[in-house]
Length: 244
Image (cartoon, rainbow, N blue to C red):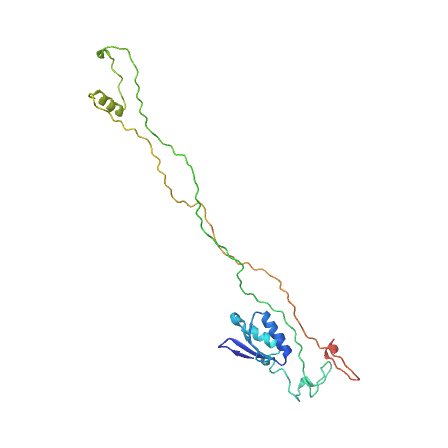
């Protein structure tokens, strides 16, 4: 298994087509990309955006018997050592032993961030009519004219003193008016001036929090079992049965 770091691709070669098919099926489910398959027993895999999981990818390929993953596992023909010595419970070994590896898929899981939604916050201007009450003042001119008993001007009693300066000034002008003159008296009232000012009435706090929880995932896994069917008058030594 050759790791081409400059392209972030991994080339894996398997011993048989079945092991290659099982490994590539697991690689696809794990989210890795298969770039090329030059032969039935080899493939080029690109970690892509999962480059930080290249070690995990190599381990996955090695579990299915990629060449570099199984290097050093096979014993050479004729090798003899302490493990080859017969003993109680020891597996039967021959000088021309061949091994068949049984593969089982191991269920693994990893997480990756995905966008599940978004929140949009906008400011909308709402126009409405609002009515308020404002106290205002205005002046009114009261002119009263009523008849009195006819009598000489000299016999008129002296009027009471006037305390309001404006009224006193007005009366003086009336007494001094000449024929043809007019008196202009301004009348004042309050005018309402409407103005607006922005005030803060509400605020929104925006934040994120990270919630950690445990979820369960299930998937179908496959494993191989060796079925030994002896035919004829032969003796089969099954180390697994002896251990049980």
